[in-house]
Amino acid sequence: MPISLEEAFDTLADDDQFSAIIDRFGERLGAQTYAGGWASNDSVEQLVCFSGFEEAVVERYLTEYAHRDPWTSAMLRDPVYGEFVNMLDRVDSDTFASSALYRELFVPTGTDVFYAAAFMMLTDDTQSGLTFHRGRKAGEFDRTALAEVNRDAGDLTRLFHLKVRYARLFQRAGNWDRLLSRIDVELYVVGRNGRLIDCNEIGQDVLSDRRGLFLRAG
Image (cartoon, rainbow, N blue to C red):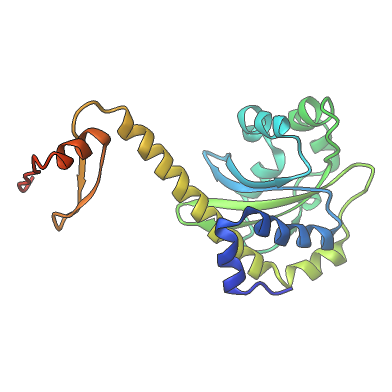
């Protein structure tokens, strides 16, 4: 199931189209849920997609359990890039069943997640990845299906790489806008060539009044 560059590019601003592609991979694996995003400080920082989870469960995962996720810890400790890994090869069932993630989050909320297949990639200065899940009742992933999906893992890696870069860019832009809005004096960002890159609202008012902006080296 190859993914063209045009199709991958179109998904950047179309979450429904992006999810549809991920759904197709999930169907081939017989997955019931999935989640994907990027990591920092040895745990998942943010998700760019998820399916089959209540939003409240996702929020609690990110704030309370991401740093205690045994699957993420195992993959970050010994990553395999661009290839799906059956997480039973990294974390045995008894270890996962005794984890805080399973006992304190999944079981009490009725979230049937017990088996996982995950892949990772390097995205700029961070690691990102996508994990598909099956429930305890459904049983573990079929290794033949995993091998077949891995034939197209390269295309999925490129797609996910683009999506994570796009999401992180918008996150940085949002953080930058919030920072600028809190500064109550004129603030300008100027490139090495002297071109104005950005400014806060007060700076914009100054320029709108044609009061000018003088620069000097240093």
